[in-house]
Length: 384
Image 1 (tube, helix red, strand yellow):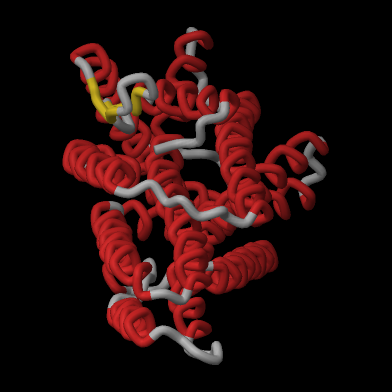
Image 2 (spheres, rainbow, N blue to C red):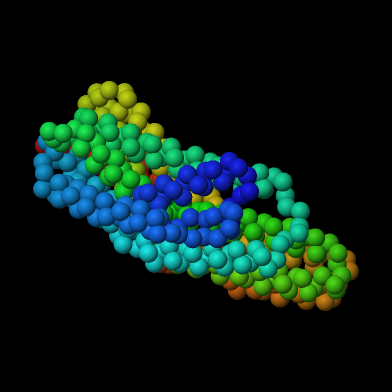
């Protein structure tokens, strides 16, 4: 399911064990046995992680709703609203863990079954393979940098505006557990990224094999082309089932990203206006940039998967432009292209909006709009 390189495997193992510890899932992919499985220990650890979430997040919601932060009206409202939205979303994501991981297990089993049925023998484009490997490594780097940035900003905020607790060690332990709960949503969407990345890689291998068959221009390639058509259709169905299983995660993560990034931009402007130490501005700005880049990498893999799905139809149409196309093979190409046209590939959580690089740009514009509104609201509150 994942790249065979040692670095890629190490990155995945770190992600898998951290996700189990955070209560995101109880499953991991075993490279030796080539199965996606769990055990009693992983189920126990994931259940304990969920238990911590059920305890800590309601406490945080109670504190946000009842406690006073001694801030101005706009900042106080922004902190409460942003924290409340993220806490509720994290709780709902934890409630969906069991059905989501069961659906993920079934998808991975079918994906592995497809790989065993047919190993694409085409020579893939080295440039595309390098691009896919870089996307994989960059996404993991952003994931861990984002995790560290969330913990750092929480620690800094706690030191500056934290609760007055007698035991600071207990307070920091609670803060670490809270950061684990918040990271759960990012680690859940990362599994969707990994499966989308693998489906995109299979599409690239399938397209390379289609190119080889079309160069032959003989009737003997028709049978394998029909088999590739079936593989192409199965990959499209798997991708749609993947999106259905992660509909809530896709929608909630995008909404949470917009709210959190807009709040971070507002906090940065407040820190600058109140002449806070530059470390606060740098830390929150770094978190702001990492959130935007992580979202961009997710949208990028969706666009690449959609493009590799459509590239197959483009290659099939090119076969009709040659001088003497084989009639049997040309008929197979027409049926293949018709199937691709009937099964378009897109990511639409609950059918509300399409996710891709265009959506990422509109999300950034929405974030800046909300941030400007918050800043203007604070300026009006200060004048009044």
